[in-house]
Image (cartoon, rainbow, N blue to C red; front, side):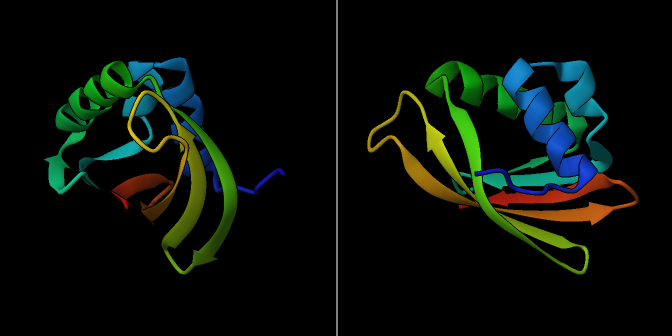
Length: 108
């Protein structure tokens, strides 16, 4: 099933799948925050380090299932499969968008 994604979110998932740090860097505001696995990663460099570690540790893929836009908040449910217990799992992604970039991302 194809899910319509706002451009910054589509760019994020494309850059993540390609493991392209240069493209991923452009998806976030400089002071963006990612909250994942009970940790906050603040700023683009910390976010790049988080993504690199997660990709290396879990070798995951993400398939968006459903999504909705609520003001500046974009909520997405995705099937995430990888090298972790219980794989695959449905995870909720909450993106806060600001000026065509991601200002915050929470993954639960």
